[in-house]
Image (tube, rainbow, N blue to C red; front, side):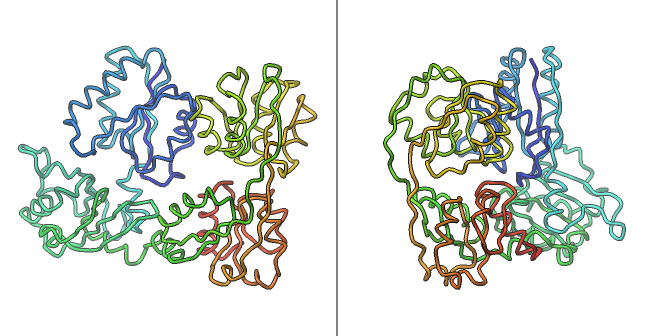
Length: 475
């Protein structure tokens, strides 16, 4: 069918293009390298085949050998499937995308190029370093660190512009710096080493060319180096690391189900925050029976717990109709059982209802398997359009909040409407001055205090909303 050679951007998930996201969602097979942000792969359909062809694992094959295998995969699948060839950054900037496009052209395989935001300029930008600035330069060069090792390199080191960006250079930066100094660069030429740019772990180290030559920078890859006068602008224009610093050492109370909280704690640690469990709800068993599913056109799941409860009763893989899921984690639980489920753009009940409405024939018979405490939003939206049925398959038991934990916290993450109702039962003085972040508008309806509502109705969306609040001061 067609091969899409796609740039996945530098790491920040929001820097992936809309076209790239759509094609990932539609792909039959994704052939991918080691990505700065593997969460991108969660956009793919559960039925999509994933083929990892990374080149940076210990003991890996020679890169040319792997490239031959990649080319063979493109030829094997390109004429019968929607193939996404997913690469970090931009596929045409030191990504061998041009070579892979040539393979497609030589074998009469239709292909498209989807440019990505390159780390060559995005990572310096996140470090407050513009790669061009009227007061400093009208040109810049982008090199790979491998060039300093090549015999017969095509680079004329003496004629490079004043400002240089070096990609993939951690292991070779000493040689690169030596080449530049041997060709007239001053030892005190400013330089910046930017580690894990555009991610929560970004770190910029300002240094000079002499220190780079002497191996004075100890950073693990990925690192991008900026060499030249523009590197000094980090001191003036740094913004992303200042933004991240606002959330360092903040304590977050986690109110959801206990079984989810370790993963949330691990995510918070990436931002330098501490997660403290304060579960306000727990799953309560309910007696239920699953009817004959052959009479239904679609099943709807709104939680991982729901998937687990139903799977304990019946073999879900035998269902022949469509399956809808509220979000990626619930979809992944279904995928683990071999079931393909589709999700909407917004990971809440209303967003799911809108997605079902646009992807199911009117009048179809739907069975929603969800909590007895679920909000009525989805039922209200779907009942007039479909033959809609609901079975409560588990309940929610509210737990008492621990006021002493609130005293030691900076922010409370409210994970659901049930959590919000439980939180509302405590003394309002205990919440005085606390920052509260709601996972979405349905949960917000149950919070009487001033609070922040995440625009992306997922845990990472709550983190982003909190950091934006710290940065702007706006609820």
